[in-house]
Length: 211
Figure (cartoon, rainbow, N blue to C red):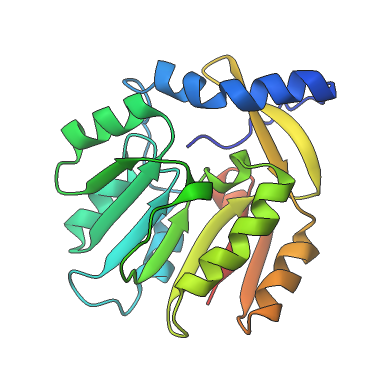
């Protein structure tokens, strides 16, 4: 899903609750146009790192997958099996139509069903739509899904707090832990991580790579 726009604003607590509640419907509203004209120039170097050494047919779990464009075709054309979850129902409807090689589910990443083995976990422009509390709870759960040789790639915020962003002019919710808090949680699970704050190669996204 979309990253926070460069123009972010703070809002009242009540406004943030409403925006959080409405974010899924914003994405459903724009499901058909999502990904139009979008290339993988920003994502591809990180996707290559995420999948380096994976065997053909390896499963990549994509959380907040949107309509599958453009990451889904990249993964499937590289020979991987992509399993995507998104809470915007119309996004999944479009993903099933446009990337039929993938396996797509309507679902909230904070309440995933029991999952079979996965070889890598990805949430590009999705994880930061969770609240701070949800992220603190989910990150350790995702780390538990990874075997020692598996990797995870997330885009996150660059400081703790709640802000708003825009998707095609509509307001959406974003939140983040402090960057060091992510690294501490990961280290507590015996994993290493790389954090790139406002990476200029990815239009200013903050990248968290677990290996």
